[in-house]
Length: 128
Image (cartoon, rainbow, N blue to C red; front, side, top):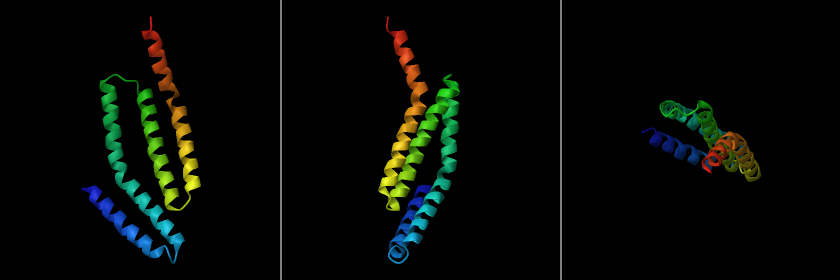
């Protein structure tokens, strides 16, 4: 049950941050960033398992790796964007978080162009 460990670690660091924040707010931000990095490293192995499963399924379904890679990149951009924005919000920088989210949305739109083009091409072919 790794999630229990992650949540427990989150609670402990949160309590430390609440205690330290009054005296040394810069250390509180560093603790938050450290925890974010640790959590990311802990789930990295789980992410690789999911990615390998998607690749196997796409291969069995005869889906082009280009489209699968694009979808996986879009999912990655969404997760990383949310993660980065939350870290900025935790540090009290809501304006920067908003800009990170905007950049993530633009990147997703740009990455989705080949898939949108394929869908549009398929629709045009289906219409008599």
